[in-house]
Length: 438
Image (cartoon, rainbow, N blue to C red):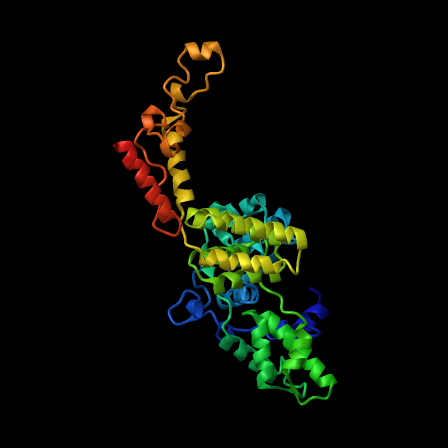
């Protein structure tokens, strides 16, 4: 930057409140006590201290960029910041070359911070490998996505993954109060922050300090313009407009919410099941995605313990395709409650797994001749169909017979449970087995 830009940055001219209130030391950073508390990895850092390459993983607004900057300052390393959104291999190579020159000429270390590192392609990430391994740069990558999915394994193995947690309500309250009294913040605006305004701010922020401060700045402006003595919940609501739910349809939060939804239904908790479903719908998820998960769940986790469950899930899918949203949330909610409270059995999953293992282990076993159709004279001459007993010719439409290939006779694929209707199926199966034995 030029002289004027450097001066403006130092005075924090025309910067948003979230940028003006960015902590200037590790001690000022709020939250993340599991990283910054006494004896933790990032506490008490000083010039020259060794530092491994890090991957900072956490939701937005938890201080990933701030932490990287403060760590660089603490260990007296030259900080280079790149964003994976607009940087490529060329910029990475230039940064590494400059880092090597600083190391060779002045013996100084370079901390290379890459924001949104999961957006780098495999080629771009591979370009970092030799320089991280050789120590030319200390890499700190920031990501909101699970590094196991967004970062190549070779780079992942050379970094220490650090999980940043969403800020607690107490953390957010402390940040808001500091912003109201700090000269860098809103100390001179002439309005106070009411208790209900503070509660509204914290509730709207969802653990995101940046969102909290951006909303606070607009709310303070609204209160000041109206001549109000303090920022109220109404000012906060007007500033926030609509609370954006943390949910990336292709990212880690997406998979986390989906997992919670399925596990809640499996755990027979209708309240939690409907909550997680609503989280997805209100965040803009395609309802058909949610309904497909419900159809799969009905077969995988309910199965024959309640054979109607699959019909309920499919009917909900058809209903939503017929009426759309918003009315479609009603059959969805009905179906989710039904699935959550239905008796559970995963025998569809286990039965198929056993059959699949038999197919893979034994290969294409021959079909018994008695089970083959005898369509032509040649078929009949070769013995196809000989000995087949037509069940409807016998009492109860059942005749003891072996239908598996000879090598699998006696194997059990389906083992019914005592859950729901499947308990009745278990009794039927036992009765048939007894008739076959006798």
